[in-house]
Length: 469
Image (cartoon, rainbow, N blue to C red; front, side, top):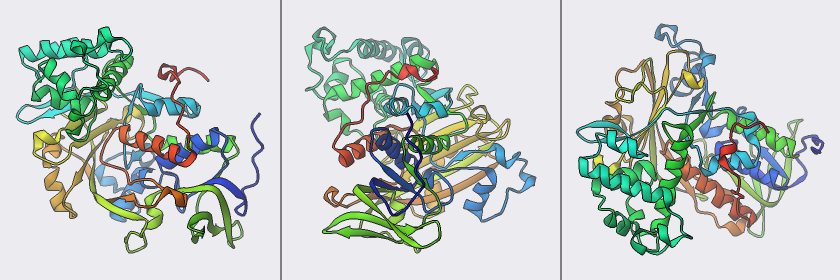
């Protein structure tokens, strides 16, 4: 019952035009096209992924060092064995992204493998597994004797909690009304436990959640525990061959639903009528200027509003900058039980910083690098705009890695949109420093609602991942 693939024409009208094939744009165009909207999806580049592309080894050297290919003296193996994600993000096994992937059926194009470990950093004692079960708690060196008992009691409460069943409420407190700080107080959980629950389990970016209704935090902790229970060691999964398969999977999905994808399309200008965006001018197959009309709106990534000099247009506001330090190694990160893949969160409170530092590690076991190799990324929001200053801010994280074989470093400004939705131009935010999907996924769902007025359907059961369609 698939619609016939119409010849790709520029000068037609579509419900939505999407500019850029980054992860967010691809998920949104997939959601739009599977829900019956017509989509034209264009990218000014000749490859998928934009700022969140996956690169082979030669492409990495080209991007960061301007070299044509990787020097053989480094003995990093074959270039094509590498699929290095510029913005790696691990998926929570029971999280919203998995539900979106399942509901759009894009999972038929992807294969996932569990991530081996989830860790948190503590000043003075280094890296610890994030405890997510009673057994973990008893074995953990992160917790003192009394803390182990209190944390286990809290975990039991999280597992059994149901908002509809008052018997599961802590001390008869309505968690949709009381702040999380009161629940912590009731279970006598000190700063130490609050810190890893907040940052490494619930993945909050700061402490403001403690004054908000507790239900939000309890459900996040429950999601983490359920996700760990699904695969055993960590709550995270990652696609074999890296995240590059997502934009490609979504482009195939979009095409099946009659959507059109075009690469190598420079954007000449955006057309407006009475303050609303109505079309995008680019070039057609013969290289002549042509305009595609947008009935309901245009979605774009921020790079479409930054000129050659790197100056942002009036549509954007800079929100800071993110440093990313890609390290290729021939050994796992020390003190992670030889994990072939993991995430380590260094809470801001441990480092006296304004924000957390994230480390992600994937390896040849996920087919993203040559045999025996590991690709590690350290990422964080930084104050410095220069390399030396930014590296100094990340030194605690870098010291955890041990010896590296090759490093690539970048500091990039991050932007958010300042446009009004009434103008129908929707611009995604720059990718943040997190190495998990929670913030990105939230943005995708909010954006879908702003564009269509409808909620994303998340009623699907995430345990269906891996079942044959």
